[in-house]
Image (cartoon, rainbow over all chains, first blue to last red; front, side, top):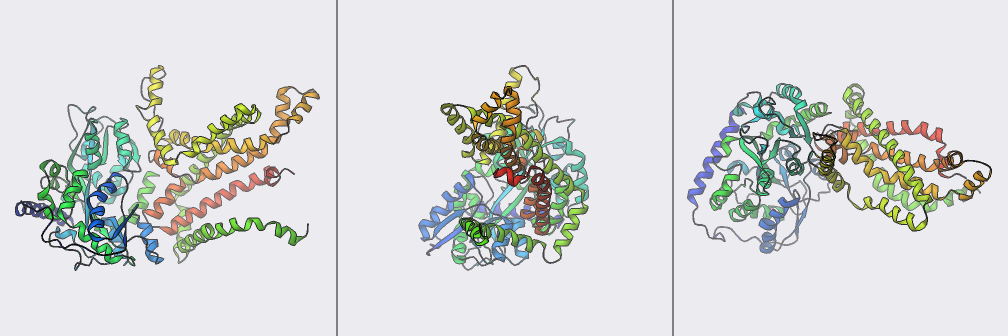
Length: 355
Length: 277
């Protein structure tokens, strides 16, 4: 698994580049896209806040208008809930914006509907993102962020610096989740980013244990990132790229880098026994279109699954996407398959580590 | 009263009991059964008993909850006394002030504390402006922050439960004590305090039990360093999908609650205190 990860990323980037040249002049309404029609409703479970707002504007509302299918948006994706819904045959969600390992763990237990590629067009999708059990929703990245005020002269360049309190004195915050903290610890310990998987869990925990006193805050929710940075509570942080961009746009003196970032892929999945399976597939079909994807990235600079979408984006947006050529090579892709297999064991160790 | 008569007297409880049965006892029972059935249960209990982490977390949870209960009692009792003895025109608006925090969501209040207590937050700015400290004081993302958040959320329950009982104390009893030569302090100590004890007991039990189940406040204000049983249960249900362990932890918490409350019930004669006649 160790090499494949990076291979995929490189190929991924290459294809994006090809897509960009092939599609320079695109009509606003694609000639190829079939109009979607239907009736009834579809229940979409996604993440809240401005993210869901951007999805509504770019995808759900135009889809509703075109198809006549009512979209009901609920929150938030939760593995345990889907598990309970499917095993009790009371499935309330038709399509869910799921983390990669969520999809794999549910698929392993036969709790998902297969993607119906007679409805969902796959030709333009990045091939790795058109899987049996789901199509790519967004790619996001955990990156190294810092206070530009504290580190005005010399900026940290990677996770080694993050844990180096002698060169970079300051307060630090990490996301209170083993994913991707273990990867970041291994990178700091000198493991090359294309040789991370299978993770050397003992080595990762050893480093984290040693540096535990350096971490002043283990934050519970992504929404705490702006509070932590605006309040100057910490100087160095493991944060999502979108939150760092948001802070920068808001005029807060912060810096961040895609270097050694951990990018991962989310997928749209349909829980087994969904009451509106076909409508869910139709919504996924709409999601594969490049125009709404490009529009979405204006509000939320995240990776999108259609190769053609990247050709429609301005340069400034491309520079902010974790999956753009130039950015993707600097990061590593989190191996959701490895996590799906090991997460239960690791969560146990993680709880002992933080508790 | 005959036995059937007494049973008929319980009829008004029926709607609530039904709701509890359907919405609480049944689903919780199912979670416990599905969690503990099938071999996983025993192993989970063994894990609970042998891994020191769980004992430590349980003890920390109990300690946290006890400390908060005590602090709320010390802070809340004088407030309740003031409210109960103040003239009506003053007592009513003061009571509203006590209740107002109930209108704000728990999450919003926790985030507000984060902003107030953080390193360059209002509290630290005040401390530094007053010359009490040169460096920012760590007020949050530690156990102190959790205490502040929990006390703020739980204090009204203590005040209201003491206030309710104190309002029922007959003021003529205090005058009678004064007539018999008791000083103000003696009257307070020998008449007021014993008569207000039911409120203290009810409030303390309520706070202790609520405190044991706290989740959002320790998770946010503790900076990930104050793990409580509820935090562990959540992680096991949602992330590890280890429902047997989550169910075992819930049972452990329930057992600890009962163990802690049983002596309290005996000692305080809770039944009589709540219904003094």
